[in-house]
Image 1: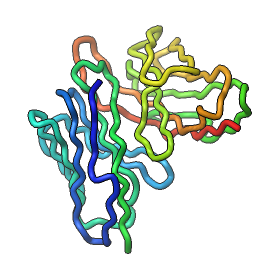
Image 2: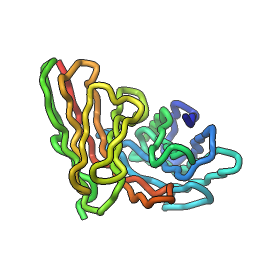
Image 3: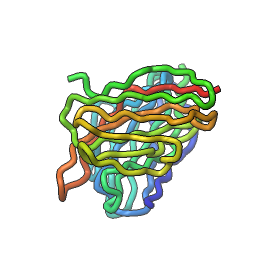
Length: 110
Length: 116
């Protein structure tokens, strides 16, 4: 099946700093989503981005499908950005099944 | 729209007990699925359904049963709970059109299950 690798596994920032999270995948995809899991365990949809670039406030994402990676940018980080960020992909031969990476644990200190 | 709802939010079971985790969506999505999340890990697919009456196994199906009698509901049954099934369970749904793929998936709030 398709493999998903996220880096870095852990990231500690001071409030106000910028960061880039990376997601590499091993095969062509129909779907790629970024999620934020907050400290209460809730999964929040950030981006649906199988290709191209999207922006939502301080967050933006870019997927380069031909090179099999996606990047999530967080600018001017806030303590509320803390949590785990997951990348999930649906491979072209996976049906509608999502395969998740192991996540990036982000801690933003005041 | 309520989106994807799950009940209960929390549950404690003894080894050997059975129970059903409920999942419902009001978006008329054909595709529904169940995932489990163990500590420090991403989500893994248990079972999924591409429409009423159609289900299939995911990556970790052992110990779980599903059925899909309506478009809206997709319950997950634990037949004889084991401590290894202690986890957080998420239900998800999305559109699914024959011959097309890649629709955004929407997740419920999760059910935290502890088996003692």
